[in-house]
Image: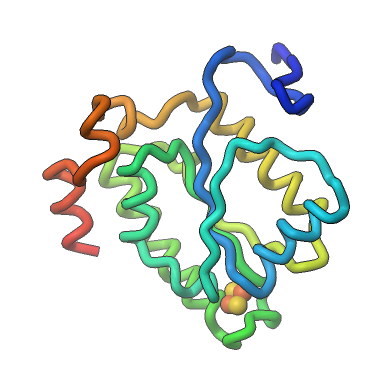
Length: 172
Ligand code: FES
């Protein structure tokens, strides 16, 4: 693997000139706080992600993930509290059920399984947050740009869903 440093000084692999777009859904009480812990602890990690804070990982429906891919994400990470720590008791168990449905939707869209990930990260696990982000970004670099975003062109990428995706979204 050809390691180089990007603009931020973070080590990256080949595919120069291309950075994956990762969308991270993080629950307010654990994973989002874990990201905050990574920040205040000045733990370096890849910067190529956008975070969407939700109150609980159980809130992440397949349609949310589909929309992220439709809007150009190359990968989606769903993260929440460890079992037994969910602020809403069973929210993360619900997240597992939703994630299974999401995996089916992603498969229906012809996307690789490696573009989707579910991880439990606590508020204290800043280092783990950074590690998960780095690993996932590297995995996405290996996979390359999402076929869904590649299939869309300029104006379309910022606009409405494709008819096929609308059909899938209506079913989930
Ligand atoms: S509050 Fe974090 S997973 Fe439910």
